[in-house]
Image (cartoon, rainbow, N blue to C red; front, side, top):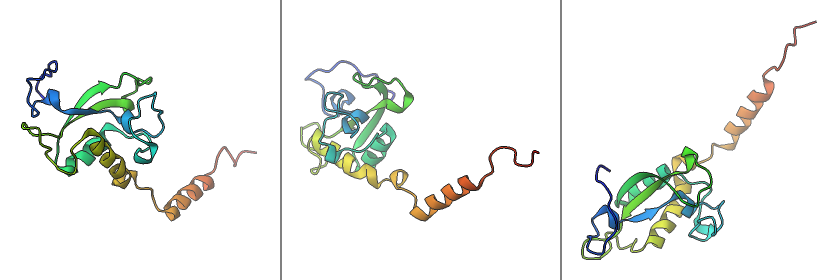
Length: 148
């Protein structure tokens, strides 16, 4: 986003970026407690979501999305993996929802929690490929066997 975000005021329209909802990955992280920032029940959450995954899911819904390089204040780790804040526009200027199936912040977050496990990046490899990978790793020689 190239626009500078200013402080919030009630005169702002819903199309202004300042009025868009914020979603941090910690809101949907099943590994976090409510005190650590999780906002939903664990049944709706996923393990260690990233801001890229959240963005990918929201772009497929047709909502306007923005990514900011921000760190969640309750996040203890300063690693790049935990950075990222997603802004989403869910209402028109007249206050009606852009998508009727996502009228609230909670409905958007529940959709994200249900959709992230379906992403191709989250799909596990088939079991036979995993077995081959472990067999190949164990067959590799370690050390110097030819030494006498």
